[in-house]
Image 1: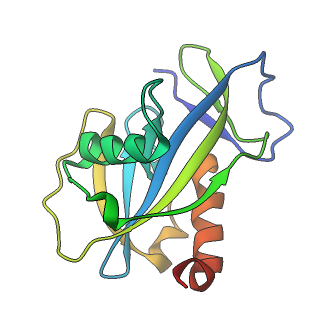
Image 2: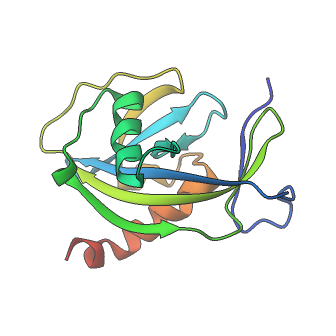
Length: 159
């Protein structure tokens, strides 16, 4: 089976025609651990998130995606918008040959109790990882730089 491929600042990325994919993703934390999904379309780890529907805001998108991919129902008040990641080198190539530029609205969610997670068909696993263990994982290129930047600037984002 052909896998989804992710590119960030990579000259070997396939060339785009004119498709921009808008989406939202979230750094979901419990007890200083990050929730990641192992994507069933690429066998890579990534943040919880997905594509923006035409009739929803980025905030509505991430609340829907969190529920669909994990079973968690998050209150709007628990969402903190961090920033938009719109570097034109954020490219995704899907198994069907579709190539898109990915623009992601990024959020932070801190959970206060250990949730019961329900894995969707889009993922093979949902795991809370210690920050040190994340470095050993094969993370989608379009999410790795988001995680790295968040961890580097976390103090700024939390103030």
